[in-house]
Amino acid sequence: MITIDGPSGAGKTTVSKRLAEVLGMVRLDTGAMYRACALAAERAGVPWDDAARLGELARGMELSFRNAGGARRVFLGDEDVTESIRTPGMSMGASAVSAHGPVREALVAKQREMGRDGGVVLEGRDTGTVVFPDAEAKFFLDAAAAVRALRRHSETGSSGGQTFEEVFRDVLRRDAHDSTRRHSPLKIADGAIYIDSTTLSVDEVVEAMRRRIHGHAG
Image 1 (cartoon, rainbow, N blue to C red):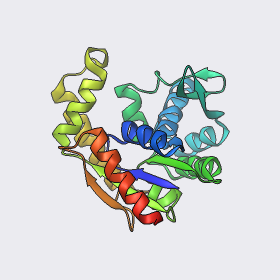
Image 2 (image 1 turned 90 degrees about the horizontal axis):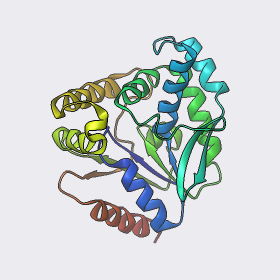
Image 3 (image 1 turned 90 degrees about the vertical axis):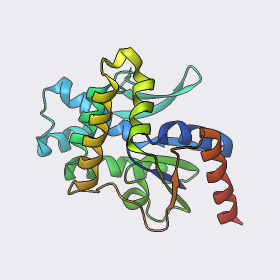
């Protein structure tokens, strides 16, 4: 069991994909689950600040990860929502819904069920602190806020409809929100290895994690 936590834009998604491939493990993107919850709530007309209704929705969501077209895709029921949840709006929506205890309780239960047999790389914001605090290897991946904003802006490009300055403000706002929320705030898990990816390539980060994991196993 390997967990990778960290703030928005630190590179968790890309790194966790590559690491899972290198190690021959399954990757579980917990952040995608909160994005999917935000999308489901928007479609159902449930406000992102209605904790009780959001919790009920999260418990009843038919959420799954499937291999399709050679990639790991996110499904709500039978609908592939992988692209729909990767928008600036759903990014802020995920931050909003994840602040509610009933939502976190419902989705953490689903995450533990998905990862109960091990052989999993989990990435998110509380995978090492709450979901699997006893994971064999825990990492906290970080980077300078400006660099994280630049990565986000480069990912979305013109399709995101935001300037770099707007993305930077969103990153700072989400950092503050995720770090100060009442339920499962973003923090470094006990025993986690801190990696600053500001000046590192994806390959360098993955190799650093691989060496740590093999050293731990030895």
